[in-house]
Length: 459
Image (cartoon, rainbow, N blue to C red; front, side):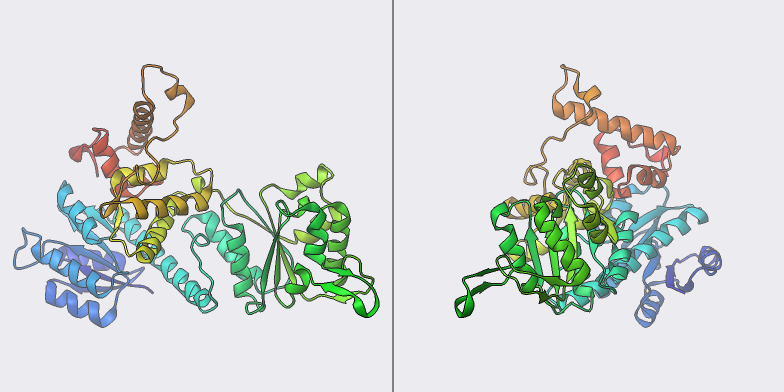
């Protein structure tokens, strides 16, 4: 069982929480700073529930914030859920700025608090899993950004990539431009028994069609002892992985030759007559469903079935919810370190712009915008302008009003959607943030921005 530390000065509430949560976690207890620090350093709990009102000043928050700073200074990955007085939004937001994972207003509803704590454990377990995989890939010189996310679709991709890496069967990866198809292919290769072998890509859509044959299969020129041999991509990928991007772009006579490589593990160079043994794994990628190319006569049906033994579909970034900000922060840390910049995060307006953007270029576009922001930013937090996200597209029915500017139309649409989510969740902001697929802190900032913030009617 996972370990949870409950830091609460009131003995009755502390015991009540320990009893209610003890069926799911090993619950440690602390009533003041010294007890809390002793339990924290001895057991290293992944998640902490912290009441900021600790002795000697039960009505203040100084001791609670000292506790928060010490814990995150020692173990920054710890998820701290702060318990605050009902309606104390300023203290809650201050705790988030100090690095708390989330906050919960008293009085405590055990079911709601359990849900918050459960999400905290899920997140830290995902982060640990990601770090383990990152360490494996780092040892082989392979990065991971863009592959692992918290959304269900990316978790399925991650699990499937681990499973298929154990075999040598061909894999077909589909997804829009910029979703990370080649990165996923490299990850599969790095995790496989061919991890130390070469990874050789070929871009069929941009390679000259007259040169594709020799580029892929190699070429022989001349005769006898004077023959000149030019090995192709397949030979360069020996004992490794060949990555074919857009195989439907191959002319059909080359598709026949590739089919033979898959069936017999043999090839003939262009201009040659000798069979050459091959030892490669083939991973393909396409922006379109290749079954459409088969029906259009662009891809041999038998080759399609050989290439798509396993198919992985990468979701577009716009459907990945909170993965947008997860990736944005990963890219921000990477580029800030590379540029020696003192950029620490995103403003609330930037977060809203990032989460509301349609991302036609997917992860590649996000990476480029964050890199641009780190280079151009003059302050510690990135604004929408430096990300190139000053104005977002809005629904046609909203933008149709000629009396509104694009920004006004977008704000009106955003306000309508947020109001509907809060109404449908009956003022429960935790549920509303889940409906909108944004973090609670982002939702609070949006409510204030649109004049919808009502502490008395929110929980």
